[in-house]
Image 1 (cartoon, rainbow, N blue to C red):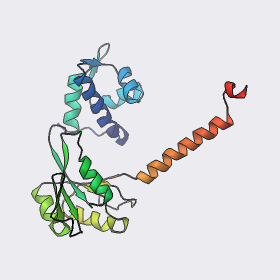
Image 2 (cartoon, rainbow, N blue to C red):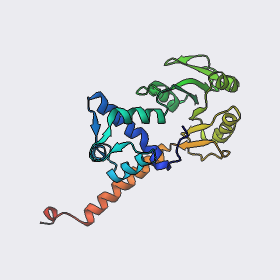
Image 3 (cartoon, rainbow, N blue to C red):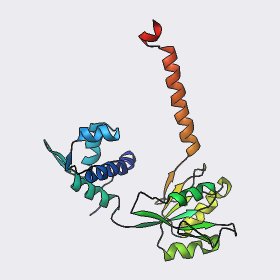
Image 4 (spheres, rainbow, N blue to C red):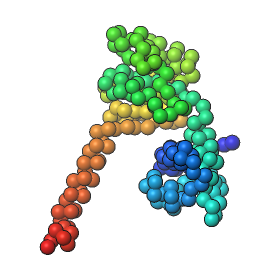
Length: 222
C-alpha cells in the first residue's frame, strides 16, 4: 500500500503515539479516546485526530480507538515489523555513548556497523558492534544493506563524509554535527543540534522567569 504524504510535524509525532500505545497494550487496555491520548502525550486531541485522519478511519465515533489495531497499524507504518540496520560514523565520545545505548528500547532499529579513522579503534567490537576503517565503508554498507547513517564526526569533515555516505548508497542521515549538510534531492537529513536545543530550553526558562517577575501573583503582591 502506498504511504500517504503527511506533514513532517505529524511524522515526528507518530513514534510518540506508538510508544504510548505499546504502554497501553502492555497494561491490558483495549481502547483509548483521543482525549486520553492527548492527556498522556501532551498533544491536543484535535491535532491527534487530524494526524490519524491522514491514514483513514482509524477510530469509531463513540468508541475511540482500538489499541491493538492502532499499535499494529503504526508499527507497520513506522516499519517496526522489520529490523533496520544503521551505520554510526565517528566513534568519539558521542558515538561511544550511542553505541552503549544502541536503541536499546527498540526491536526494529540497531547500529550494526561503526566506522572511524582511529587505528586504535578499528578492528574492535564495542557493545557487539564492529568498528571498521573508512576504507571499508562502501563495502560494508552494501553487504549489510544499510541506508541510514548517524553522523558524529568533527564539523570540518561533516560535508565530505556526507558526500561519501551518499555515494555509498546512504538515503538518510541523522546529523549530530552543527553543519547543515548540502545533499541531493531524495536524501533525507534529520539534524540533531544538542547545543541549540539546550539554548532554546534556557531561553524559555529565562523568559518564563522574566514574565513571572514582571507579573507577580496576587499572593506575591500582598
